[in-house]
Structures are given as C-alpha cells and as structure tokens.
Image 1 (cartoon, rainbow, N blue to C red):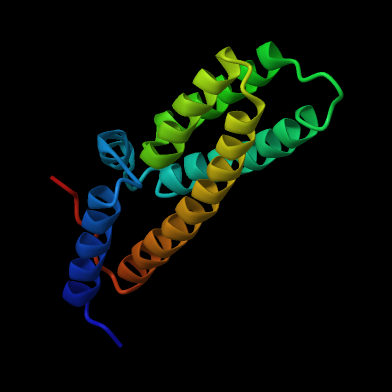
Image 2: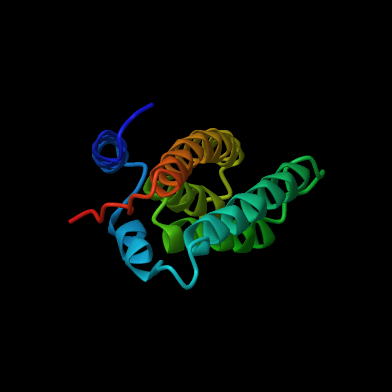
Length: 152
C-alpha cells in the first residue's frame, strides 16, 4: 500500500499534468481552496452537477440538430450555459470548445456546430475520467489519514 507521502506526490503530479494538458485552469484551484473539513465533498458535488448538466445539454443539443430547421438562437443559449458550467469549475478544454461552438452558432454553420458538439462530448468524457482519477486519489489520501496537498 502506498504511503501518504507517495499518494500526495502522485496527486500533485497528476494535478500538474491536468493543468499542463489544458484540462483544468486556475478556476479549479480557486474551488479547491474553498473546500474544507466542514464540506469535504464540495468539489465532488460541484463537478458532479456540471457533468450531469453537461450530459443533459449534449442530449438537448443532439435533438436540436435533428430538427428540420435548427434554431441557432436556442442552440446558442444551451451552449452558453454549457460554457458557463465548464468555466465555473475550470474545465478549460470544454470551455474552449464551447467558445468555438458559439461562434459557429452565430454563423449558422451546421457542420461547425456538429463538429463542436462531437468535440464537446469527447472533452466531457475525457474530463470526467480525469476527475474520477483525481477524486479517487483524494479519497485514498484521506482514508490513509493524510491531507490533500494544495496546488500553488
């Protein structure tokens, strides 16, 4: 079994990789600072809400693009909500796709929108997996009696 120090080192290395690969940005660091003993599941809760919301939004968007006439204004509102959710938790790559997505909506570019929808879905799956690993590491550290190291 890994020691607390090994788990904490692993946690820092993994988190650093998430930042360097653009999955997360400083917004996530700010949220980490808000988590404390009084609400140890604060971050997991926020991320879970974002991921559930994202799944729903992707389904709504998929349906919107199956209509005979695409309501780009409505699609843009959903994408804006998607962008807001991803930026609020620091999911940088999802946010970036949403920015492109909104531009394609403005241009009423169906191919661009469909490509962005596919990319947004792909990035959500990736970031979900990254969060699962990160939170599993957090749980292992806490179970072993350690504390979660703060990123600078």
